[in-house]
Length: 222
Image 1 (cartoon, rainbow, N blue to C red):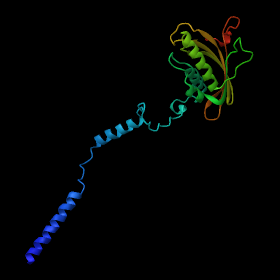
Image 2 (image 1 turned 60 degrees about the horizontal axis):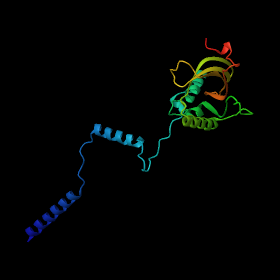
Image 3 (image 1 turned 180 degrees about the vertical axis):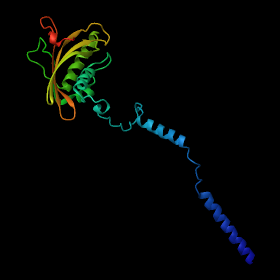
Image 4 (image 1 turned 180 degrees about the horizontal axis):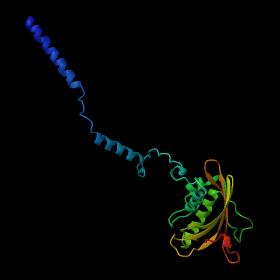
């Protein structure tokens, strides 16, 4: 009798042990560090991948400020170069409005030459210039006229005092960077301010060269 009881207890223990083993989680093998790195890279790439149309978009990373990537306001040369670069664009594009907002102070003024049909000068900010340029580009496309615009500085006369600079910057405008002859020339009057950390464009006023209004010798490229 005792032997039968002992055998029954042994069977119960073995059954319990088997049940516990069946319910236990099978341990994973060692993690491959290369595979884990690839998986992490895929996950990161998926985070920043373009979202297909019709799908719920993932959160878009906040872009860094423009001057962290390229210090447009680090010097007078840098801010003027940035001004010319952000207004230039190919036939299928517009000026770089985001960068332009980083070039001008928030209330920066842009004063184009007065048109013959206008009684007074038009004073714009970056948003006002954007609206004006977009209308002009749409009209040019409708007429089949070129829309590309590339402008560069060819001479500069600079006067500075403390945190204020006034630049008379002579420009040439072309439809393509390698065009031999510009379709427009003139002088930009650019007012610059330094806030103790960087330079900003406070305002820009310009006039084009034309018959009866030649560019003075002191403002021409030497």
